[in-house]
Length: 609
Image 1: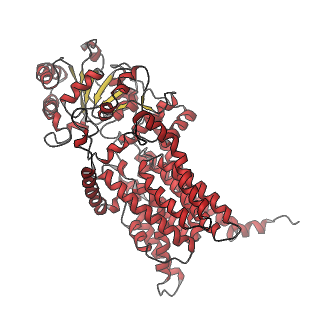
Image 2 (image 1 turned 30 degrees about the vertical axis):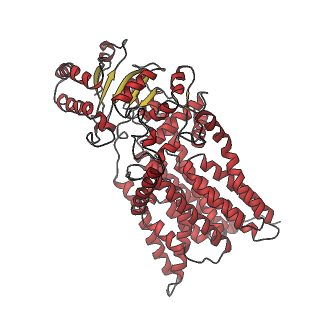
Image 3 (image 1 turned 90 degrees about the vertical axis):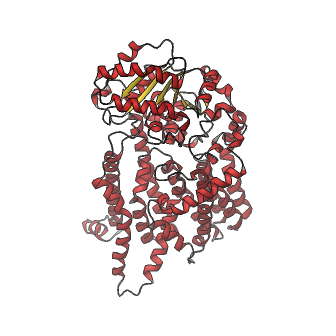
């Protein structure tokens, strides 16, 4: 046997199989480099309620408290008041978020062992990022890169290497995809699972076309079914994928019985233990996640008094669906970070591809898109999708849209009467440039604020909570997800109105109230915090006037308005304290109801410069 010589290695590098792997390796290094640069320049911490809520649930799991939460929603307490009363003895169970992504984060925290506590000395050190959030960022970037690998293999098997190369370039060059990577949301985990489903479904359909491969079609469908079940346990809206998946199993295969049973029963088996747990605690397999179907903003979540039936029902659901469909159709391109990819997919959906498995898979992904659009419309309603990225579930189908859209574009370009195939390259390059342009522009020009807005700054959050509240004390707040995540304290979502506040105070004493820009920057006349308009209006006046005073004048002015603020909120004479954030100069206003709380404690807290 002749050993390979220098000429053989040179040939392999220049024209052989080694050349392909060198190019792939170089592209991989390039993508990893871009990802690192994007993360370093664009990441300034978690900035969404869902991301922080999922992270604090994961920490509860790591600490041995099971799937529990410190983010308290008044509407759940309304239905399950005993859970809040018993919180001193046992944690309050999580009844809104599914468990898959918190479990993944819990595994990450177990391996990396991040430090959740932040020293107050971090003020002087200029802390900008919270260490556990950096670990979450790294995990999501790795999921993005892994998704790109699985996506390339899927498109290569479904179409060919040329389509896969361009599709992967468009996939990894999407600005919104990288935005989700630094958001801390479970979107990248779901995108990875969708790529796994796409690959396995394609392999199952290919195996079904051969006589000897029919048993393997059941195996591939079973693997895809596990991924579908994991998707359903990441966001309940992924039920929209399960329905067409069952139809695919029963209608598209020679072994219809076994593939159909795998598609129907395996996802259900994956989810069944969690559904049983929710039924035992709340009486509903989805816990209280159904509230989002009727919640146009935070008002319903913050409801404690009054009749819940006035806000839920078929009429409210239908109205929300109609408003949501209008919103989704008008902003359809926003869900995918641009118009190019969804336009290519929608046009390519009506093309008759030659490969049989592609034809069948096209109907599966098309049905999933329609159903998920309906599910997403119900949850979005009239909310601004630009500001509420955590409500964007449609994006998880982005890999399928790119795969079929890119294949259709190849069909169109190859039909052009060009004198040479070389002339196709500028067309594909132009398409890639249009897709990558927003990402490049962001990397070159956009620099976010040092910390996420409204300023989620861990050192100050932990000072406000941990030094002033015990672990079993409850604070009402307009951003309780931040209090639960950064400070590991019971955080009650600011009740809908003063009456609800007083009733909840009877169930479990409220030790403090924190007002932040989340409520103070909203319309206090007609918005979701209108019931607190009198108090917020007086606080905003205090902020404006005291912002032009020195420290002594500022303190004296607070004392003069304490009585009027007290009348606007409670007769227990809370102690108001104005705290200003560093870096961005944002004011937060704190009220303390604790009888043991003294002014000396607050005076020890030096205002950071």
